[in-house]
Image (cartoon, rainbow, N blue to C red):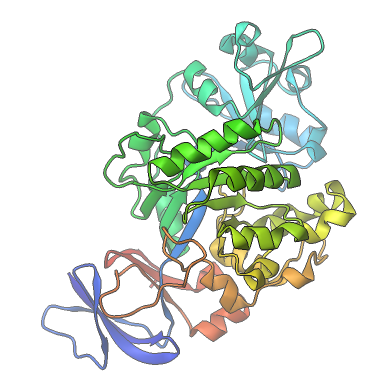
Length: 459
């Protein structure tokens, strides 16, 4: 298959680009060959496709079939009652809610959720993705009273509260067998945003989950949750090994060191979930003992104390972060995080200055997927209500875009370029790049190509 993209902007110059056999075959003043497709770029920028370095594919598909239980769709208790009452159940009668936050109806447990909806089994996921809450009917069906999973929260009398911390794997073994997820819509949405490669950051992917994401979307797919030593199905690349340092219960230092060494021993770096100061300090201490791997990365880095920035740079750690959370829910952070830590939230510029490789990403479905809105968030750092947090951490539009353009296996590395011989994973914009970056918006994405094939075309 061959196509000529006429009059496109490549690195500031208007030119033509020929794509053939999944590669950029020529750049310059080109004449279409017989039978060759042509696309008039009208001076729009042609970029390498964007890479989302941290999202959760199966959770994205599930979220599309779930009932929103938090802002902006649901903002108070009465709205939550109405949402649950109207929520469709799955084939087994279960209601699945997502995106809950305590500002809606306070902390939820089984008793509180029964007060909202007791007629059907209900499970509601907190917006952080770390917590599920089940009502009484669901707790009985799950056999919660006799279960022993460490994530099951219990009260002072040893009774389950209905709050399940990081218990997704356990839940999957207790819930009725779900229908295979349809990732087609997820892939189409990614293409619409100009995303040509993704890294699934879900920990502990079992063979069924790996099979479900294998070849299910057009995007090149890397998975952090491939267990050590496990085979990887076609269509998936094993990335660094995902380790979660949960704020609900940090591991012992020796156990973390052992996990890091086990990953390094088989040639994989580690991708470590860190959203608190304590988790980051623990990780740094563990890496001092275990040693580093060139692919080691920190996921989120939601709070980075200034005194640790040089340590991250010295250890060669990459940071994969999500400033989109600031635009989405930064007002909550400013209320809930101590004022002295506000400057440490989702750092960007200080990391770049120190030489820490920085990649931007979404954490979808828990954060906003649209990369152009994340780029805008990194540039403006405005929270709901229009307050600017951490103005010294702002990136320029060019820097923010570059943080989406590094290869999937080199987050925070040099941005990819459109050049002869490069993979034809490309995004065509509707205007020159400087114009688009004045106000980043996904509406500017005109077409997306993966392996030279158009997977999105906005005309």
